[in-house]
Structure formats: C-alpha cells, structure tokens
Length: 272
Ligand code: LER
Ligand code: MN
Image 1 (cartoon, rainbow, N blue to C red):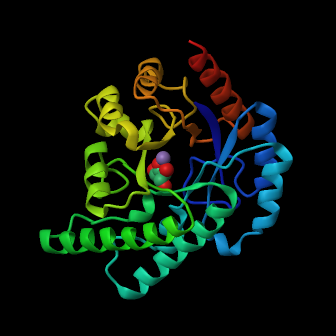
Image 2 (cartoon, rainbow, N blue to C red; image 1 turned 180 degrees about the vertical axis):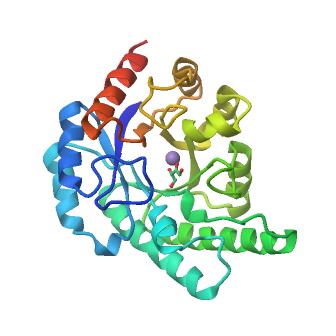
Image 3 (tube, rainbow, N blue to C red; image 1 turned 90 degrees about the vertical axis):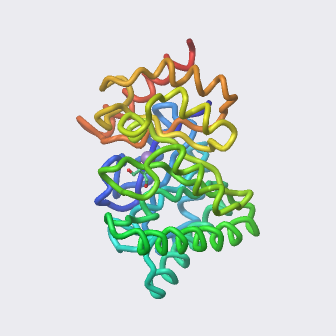
C-alpha cells in the first residue's frame, strides 16, 4: 500500500485538505515528508494550469492516484442527483473536464460529495433523483472508459448526505450503474459513523475497493483520534488491497504537523 496527501490548488469549503491555495508547496512538502503521491481535490480542471501540475508531479517524483470532485457541489451547487437539465449538463461537463485531466496524469476520479443530496424528500422525487444520478454516472463512466480512466464512488456519512451512506449502499449504486470502470472509495471517518464493522465493510468491498481515505474519528491524522487502524490495515491486507491510503484530513494544528503525523503513524502501521 502507498500513501498520498489530499491537497487543493484553491481554498475550499471542504476543510480536510492540506496546503490549500498553494499546490506546488503542498506537493513539495508531500515529497519531502515521504508520501508516494498526492490526491488532488479540484473545483474545475478547465481552470487549471495542467502542464504545470504534471510538471510538479514529475519534479517531486509523486504519483497522482486520485481526484476529489466535491468542490463542484460545495462551491457551485452542481450534483449528479439534481434533476434540472441545466445542472445535469453542467455537472457532466465538469466531470468530463476532470476525466480529460485524469487521463493525462493517471488519476482515478472520485464521485463523492458531487453526488449531492436527496434532502429527505418524498419517495417519488428521491427515485427520480437516484435514477438520474445512475444515468449521469453511466454517461461519465463511458466517457472515462474511452480515455482509460477509472471512476470511484465514495460512501459518505449521514450528516453530509442522505445519498449512499454505507458500503452496501455504494455497492448497490455501482451495480445499478453497471460500468466496468466504476469502483469504490472508503473513508474511515465516514465508516466510523455508518458501518457496523470496519472489517466487514472492507471484506464486503473486496476487489471493488480502489482507493482509501485514512483519517481518524475526529477527521484528524490517524493516531489523533480513537479508530483502531491496526485491524483496518490487517483487513485491507486480507483482501489484497495494494492501492493508496490517502490523508484527507483536517490540517490541524497546521499543515506540516498533520502531514508529518500522518506519515509517521502510517509508516509504523505498514511495517507491522
Ligand atoms: C466528503 O466528506 C469526503 O470524504 C470526500 O472524500 C468526498 O468528496
Ligand atoms: Mn473522503
């Protein structure tokens, strides 16, 4: 398993990101601390200097395993579960922009908060929202497949969304979409709230697990809360997971300390 640090080139309402607004510095620090890669949490890929970012990844010897995409929902109100045609067009265009960039840098594209929310609405509206999210995901997954890009769905806790809270929910959605290039992201912060058992959820995910956000119960770096990471790493080894453990965490008390805490703790965990 490898380690990555979640960064954003811009400041964001989504807080668990490090070195926000200074991507080059974040990448330089990630390399210095010994991370294998960086996960980029992006608002709009079409606004980015993609060549510069690809250049920094090469300069610092970092992989970019994954793009987070929730800023489109938090900052711009774009979501896959929104039935308005203009929003559907905009959210699919936004994701296709991320997919084009992902194809150049070798990243997977996470469908997390960008799924949006049902807002506890009535059953018929909820079903219509679910159906359009399935259709939209199928559409972007086909676009991604043509570019050899893998997409992933992230289960997110009930206080952030009422659309796909558990591993079982996310796997059912993945089955409904039915795209071969669609897998799963699990995030220990959300799992701690939603799952009966970390180990059972990881076994249920099995080979559909393609990315992993490793963060403590309070969304700080692992080791700063009360999650038992030893059993989680053991379960990941049991299912043969060789992907990334990504530090999508609150940068507290500051970016450098949180990043250093992550890498020191995770390096020890992986040696056991
Ligand atoms: C949202 O809480 C989250 O964990 C992100 O990875 C999804 O955009
Ligand atoms: Mn996450």
